[in-house]
Image (cartoon, rainbow, N blue to C red; front, top):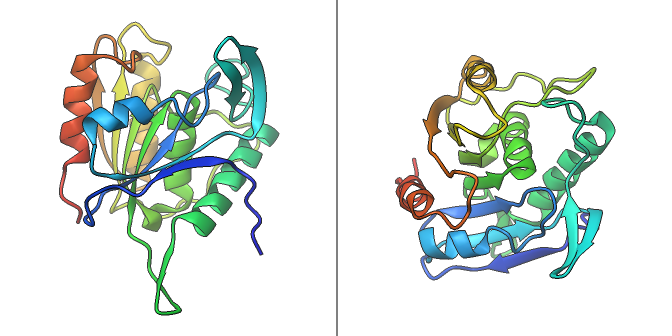
Amino acid sequence: MRRSTLEYHFAPGTDARPPRVLALHGAGADQRQLLPLLARTAPHAAIVAPKAGRWSAWTPDGQRYAWYQDLSFPAVEPIGFGDALWQLERFCAERAGGSTGGRTRPPDRMDIVGFGQGAVLGLVLAAVWPERFRHVIALGGYWPCIKGWQPARRAMAQVQVTLLLDPSGPVGYALAQATGAELVQRGARVEVAWCAGAGDLRSASLDTQLAVWLSRPHS
């Protein structure tokens, strides 16, 4: 029985080889937010881009959505965050797997490209389900403060994490270091890249770096 209710965009890609990319938009956007960036940086990749289930606002361009409610930065509202995480886990279980001849086969490990709230969720999603994801590229991402809850420690030894941060953005050096330390303790391989204008999804420098990261061979 289908239980996921998230709307999504899917592009099958033109290359049978990985990567497959799970694109997680930020607050005040929808599933289309990262599509132009990925069209430029991974034009042959299969893209799965779900839309958050929480409506946030009307804009001249249409409705906008958020995954959860932010509290005092870097804290997030735990019930909404937990609900968004559960929805994404269910979505990935139902939409990102595969079968051959009626037999279920292990799904290919995916890359996550997340922006803002999507980057935060992507980091936690990979922590709770590390065998499903290969590389998390977190644009403006950080490890959230969630009152009363932390994901169980599961081995992230096969997960690469890239934190791409703007020096003038909300994530400062101390939070970046704490995020990296948390993920390293969980076994992930972590790199932190500081790039002026990293919060601008139209940035040419962002295009160059993202294209390199997404072209890394699958292991």
